[in-house]
Length: 401
Image (cartoon, rainbow, N blue to C red):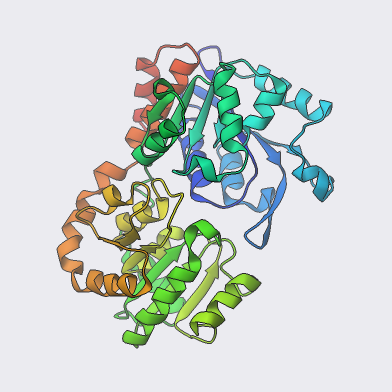
């Protein structure tokens, strides 16, 4: 349709994580409402967090396709491991990208890693890169690719999901004029207190209704500091003989040898009250079943979705002071130093103050809903494409909860 703007998103691959979940939610929310979206993933399948992840099995891929958004892979499953890791793209890959990009008005990249493709192709059209971390120096060659794209004048705008992201990239030398903060938001219809979901999940795990439950939703990655979480969990479970701990995310299974080693070190390898749930497509059920949602990261985080989703489902957020966690948790939960004893004690304090935090959790719904987020993304994309925004943003706002 002539009045719609075409947008191509570049993904490094489909592997589970908050940034992909959020970006997928943005695309699904904007597609067909003044914008037509497409996705090009550099890799069809990836191996991360001790898990082989197929694009077509991924919940984000399935949601995009269900929303009518075409998804294409640049590098298919037939390529060898060495080829899949190559930073250079061959003529066929560059031609495919150029064809996809030429059919759209604006190119988005999910984080800065796909900029290596943009830079090698010499793409000069409107380009928006979405940034989702607060440690630009700790991501391999990604910052160098971003700097190269900025220096070449390719970047129209950079979306920062948190104030900490903007501050970190500004400190890394990225021009302030390019940095735009659009805070993360989630679907309020999906993430809400749900007594039935709480009862079902607890019943499926043989957890009594009154038992204290701490939830940890993260992929198995050094950034998440899983050993620190487990050390705190060991102390918490020892002090509370009726409590349970839930762990979900990629790599949170007994097939992950590194996780098994962590469990043995903390003495939790045989615990019947620590539940490894692996990747799940229903995080809202996990958070509804929990009393506390925990985050123990010590670097890299910006505005963690797990905290936002958890608190909207009624779980009290308890987090280390990293990224924008302090602003998310303020008045709704607790911040802790990265110390296992302090974290375990904070979980206990959160349980004791549950009734105190409950009103603030309910009041947070307007702040963390996705309505404003989608409107801000829509407006930025239209500006990047050199189009007006007022009528388009109104169309986005109407159907969004």
